Length: 279
Image (cartoon, rainbow, N blue to C red; front, side):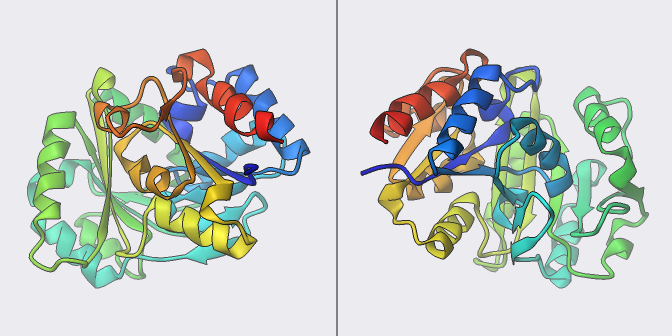
């Protein structure tokens, strides 16, 4: 059966290890869309952080952002939105005080005050890079709970891998199952990880499945490409799941198709083999 929808993760998948878009990936995606295949960027990034990547591709795309909490068109039109109840966000912040130095609350706002931090750590290299790229969207509020004047998209934690693994385990043992969902992403080579606390119904997989239903596509019509823990549900949903050669070990052990690494234009190789060859 021909592929009709491709969901592609951004960081570690579409982009290479220095966050550049390989020309081979751009060309393969352009060819796919020219043949009528829909492409969605499915990412943990916010819309405004993902949009510049979509614009580099230069073809019609859907953006599934914030680990599935929002689905938007490139013009900013919102097709789906699941916010995290502010009371849940407040409880999570209260239970994670030792991790407060890496905590932020993310809102669905036009530009200013989208990402609210209590502590802006300019000394931490990975966080400094994020702050520099997103400065116009960032605000600082102390205590952080005071920013919860409306429901946010998520509570976001960043920090070293082992520390964030501890936080992820703590939150997965939450006394009220189903209060929220978690998206965990780690980059061991940079010793950097992220834990996103999002609405209980959210994941990349749930959003991709919902978008496929809206567009009238069956699971067998859907291909997904990812590299990290937060891509698991998306890969489990897709009829054709593809993992990057640079994926975290947990994804490489599921028997899914493995393409080249992100530094070898693995996205292009996967699209050419599993989507373009079937058309």
